[in-house]
Length: 151
Image 1 (spheres, helix red, strand yellow):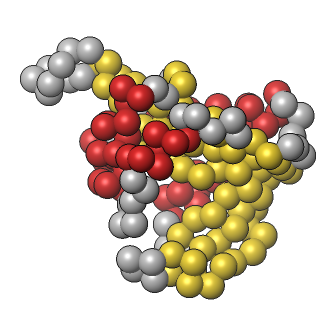
Image 2 (cartoon, one colour; image 1 turned 135 degrees about the horizontal axis):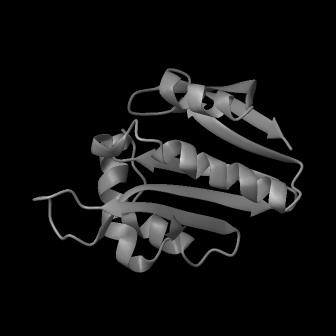
């Protein structure tokens, strides 16, 4: 895992479009590279035989903001072909570790109410449901559950 760079944006956009029904734009991610509040990381792995360049390829990413003593998780995603290999767990470990290292009070996030895989991941790290935003998501419309973790 390492900080994201402009060279990673095409891979991030590819994963974003694969994983989200209402994806953020490449330009949004480009702006996050220059946002002082933003912490944007990618996780890379060696490309398997026969799948493109043998160099490291971006297989997932994490984007969060630090706002004083609070962290806001904005995005976490892993490409479908690389899921269930521990990458999301490593990304979440980095997120939670940052909050503890910086002595933050809490971390918050929103997740589609139907996204049980993500909810299980967050609960594994001690996040608890603290609220709901009705009709928060579009394409398709759905409520967001709000989760928080006290450090």
